[in-house]
Image (cartoon, rainbow, N blue to C red; front, side, top):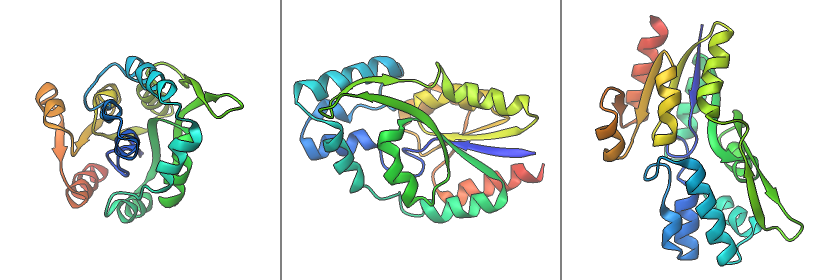
Length: 201
């Protein structure tokens, strides 16, 4: 039996930090896991920038409340949930993701949590466990599921490698160049076709 595990940002929604960068004018916040493979280093740098500019969780949540799913994402996800079970496996945080998950029809989400002080300052991030995306796939496989994994960034690679089928969805060219063995698709229609073919196997 197949189950689909997919990243959130870049597959179903725009990148949160890019939108925060645009709204605040802080150029360095544009960097994502499409640019930097070390997620821990990236997050530590983001928290430093938020502290320097006195940005709180409320500022971030306001930006997120304005973000809409990518065109066609909700319809694709509705189609996918009719075909098989789906879990969104993301390196985002519960405190960020909730408005986006609501707009997508509340699919199951596995992600991380933040530590926030009484003033709303984000003081730390708490990973569910190291390499959580890959560990999720391994856990599902231990339950005798076969996994189709979808992602777009460096932090998705271990998940895609572990799955029976790993698909890069609209990745940047640098990720394609670094991992040329993965199947690449650029539209939801093409993604439907690839998944449909795999489910028939």
